[in-house]
Length: 88
Image (cartoon, rainbow, N blue to C red; front, side, top):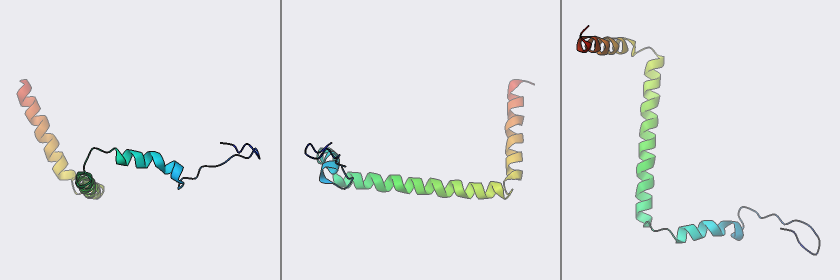
């Protein structure tokens, strides 16, 4: 946008009402009740935190070498059952 009198360009700031209007309009048109949005957000956040904690815990165990014996035993069991099933 340019000001026709001065030729200077006008900058639309993020916090201006014009910039926020599309967001406000989409919120007004939302067909999902607010309580459901809140519940959905809380459930998603809880699942994301749970996944992060589980992944962090497994990473710590693997990095420390605490899963090596279990990993080896599981791999041998899976490979042993696959060989027995194939007729070898």
